[in-house]
Image 1 (cartoon, helix red, strand yellow):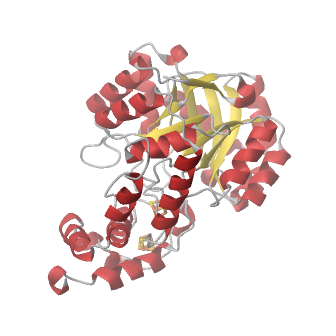
Image 2 (cartoon, protein in one colour; image 1 turned 45 degrees about the horizontal axis):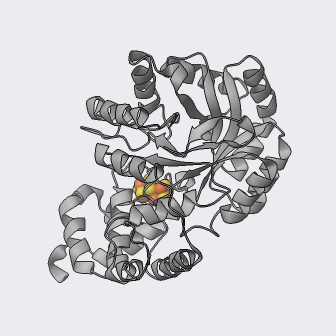
Length: 388
Ligand code: SF4
Ligand code: SF4
């Protein structure tokens, strides 16, 4: 494993962080397969991962509610006496803060779920511009100052999917930010805060953490022939996962990449890549840009499969509707995706079941108009497989 200094925190972090938002599950999203997830964490830690990332709503039953991920991580660390060996990062649910006392309420609940009396890195989760204004009016700075001074929280920061101008404003408004989590992968250099945001973090010596390094798996699954053909021209052969991760680890403004891993195989593969020094050359960079340009001509929408919009109160399987729709465009194979769409997605969960209530829209990290996009999915796939 290779370690980096996380900005001004001076913490030495493994450059691969263990994200716990996509742990293996059984009956539903809140039913974590604890045996398998424990095996994954054990392997990760034994092989050098020293930071675990979780959040209040990960693996929750309902939208934005209290999730099972923090509880699982807390149990795992306590049972294995690992709390003090591991850097623990979790996030305050900014969208759920309605009054000043809620900051304390959620932090206390999180400390309890995590079975600890301190959190190494505490982030305001998925800050939007309206939520930022709201939490400022509720004296978030006083809360953060208090939590830092009484030691319940060692370092503070935020995660966000906002545009760079707002991103910079937030950074400039509080001098105690030490860690920021943003979306970055080779398709998203100029999306949200992107490269300019990362550069600014470096200028301020704020630790940079990356989410969506594989764009919800999109960069490594169902690789179109056109894209594989481009990768095949590289002097150094790499798998799509290696390209995506080494692109990030070759950036000097990236300290830690969080990967939300779902299987032990993924943990093993990512650790192997994270443990290898692999220099991306100038010609590799040009090839990555060419791959990105080619991908962008193919995607139907920007869904990253993050799952923040789920579950839909009316049962729509938003993620898989968008996944099949996007894969159909990327692979240029509507029939194959239609087969998946009609066989894998239950009749009551397909795009045409969307009632357009809009409840999911504020949760979309990619600012998609989800009902409008679902309408396009319906237009594309229709009611039945027959017409393909
Ligand atoms: S807009 Fe559609 S997908 Fe979104 S919550 Fe409402 S019914 Fe579900
Ligand atoms: S629609 Fe938006 S919130 Fe839902 S999975 Fe896709 S990107 Fe995430």
